[in-house]
Length: 388
Image (cartoon, rainbow, N blue to C red; front, side, top):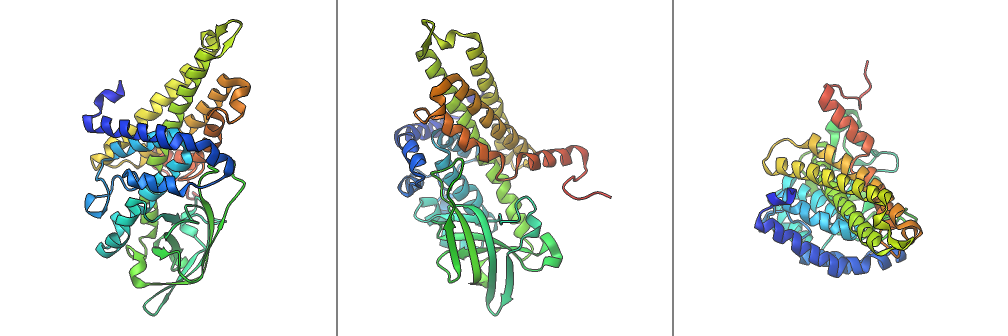
């Protein structure tokens, strides 16, 4: 088995995360989803467990885990509730990871210990109402002023945006320079001119906080710049590379949850005086789920091993993200089929798995963007740029 390669420490990390999820995450998931309620208390408990910033260096409040260990945590949280997995992914991969990699020592000391502990939340303000995959053409503008910057614009679909204390805001300083003019700023959300609005009516991730952000001439000091002017695109791409890994790991958790729920239901549910697990086509659906789960898990761990070795892993991460997210949707769909009518209501987690999995094929780069990244690596031709 692939788990045979895990160290004793990694097995302990997984078992501890599994116990925490079973005891604290799973019991709250259905009611939070029904109420469309973000459970801030549970999100802070993730910090207490060391799951917000697990790969961050210990000197900044993290646990100093490798990517494989981090992935094991994310997989378990994803099995329990993708809304809480989103908290882990955003806080750890997008926010803490970006500050640790690109921030000054002062920025790291100011933000990382509280973010890792769950005492504060952060958000990642890249996507805009009219700009998703085309990150080089942001409409948010940052104008240089005496001693700092004035930022104006809008951000959309921002996880943790309503509860964040700090926002990583990506803005264009010089539209003529395209991606070379992008900059990233650490913006305290209490700043004058910073406003958020909660987004309701989502298909899935109903217990996740999602915001629209408006920045009306928000002023920040020069010290708020993360990296240098022109580094914004690199900051965003490095963050998304890590974020895609955590989304993929969380989707392995969804696949695992689908298998567990389907096996349990199929062995207990009787039709024609026998368990439905004895029907060949039910076993086929379960087998298809297991194959997808195992393949997704191996692809995620390949990406982790490359990251931990310091090797290039962008393409392998895209492969893992593409396959794991699409597999989560397929596994959830199959799991509902195994459950029949019972799978269509929230007495079982499989209908929530399907709703929550669907968005993973969209954010952190759509499945189509992942295919273009993979195709660009294979052919040497960038299909994301008009040819000719």
